[in-house]
Amino acid sequence: MELLRNANFDFISKYRKGFMLSSILIVIGLIFLGMNAGPNFGIDFRGGVKIQAKFNRAVTENELKEKLESLGFGRATIQVNAIQREASISLGYSADFEAQAGRDISEGLIEGSADWNALPQGVSVSAVGPSVGKDLKWAALWSVLSSIVILLAYISWRFEFRFAIGAIAALIHDVLITLGVFSVLSKEINLPTIAAFLTIIGYSLNDTIVVFDRIRENTLTLKGIEYSETLNRSINQSLSRTVITSLTTFFVVLVIFFLSSSGEEINTFALALIVGVIIGTYSSIFVASPILHLWNLKTRQSAA
Image (cartoon, rainbow, N blue to C red; front, side, top):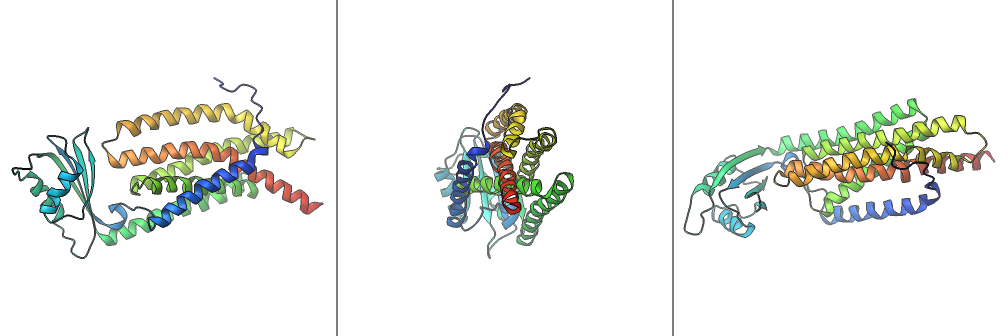
């Protein structure tokens, strides 16, 4: 199956526009990160208690907030899914953190009153201590950084160092934009999100490697033409495969995103993959390949 037969788009000449768009998206993400004082880490990384409750009727955020205030937990973060009649309650770690906070809230929600008749039909409580959260944060950071370093070494061995620079630049580009989207939407960064980031790195790298492999083949077989033309031909020859793979992955993850609206962690995981698939496909064409073009121009200028 081939969607784009004999494609002949001039991608390389548009690299300045691609770099400008990427810069704008990254800067917007960094601005929101600064405004939010960094990523919005979930309890996996900052410690605390999270309660997932399903009620016998739909509840609003305001009435649930009033109920928690009456229980002494007015600073809890609340997310309500009225359609699924579910709510997520998060308590960050503080000096007065109590190990029984989750149980106290669970028991308090069960206690009915004249103005509270939303009884939980199922309650799930998870707690993470601050020291454990800190360890998980560093482990997550090192997992992302170490994967990038290992990939840099592998691509340098598999291809050339300039190919590795292009691929790693695309990976960092993808992670920064995805992180920026999460910051703009105020989405939590938790362990499933880190797993999604690592998945994005693998997906983007796979797409980039396919293009790079075609570039290497065409460099050996196509003699006497400009390197930019070699890059364009390689991208166009891989375009059909790239589009089919990306669309297939995108639609599957999109379905997961909408069907998992009641599951916060799965929903954020799917959101990260949606952004990653789009940005990863974009970066292999408009980030990684143009870096090879600029590297070639600089090499020729140095040799002249």
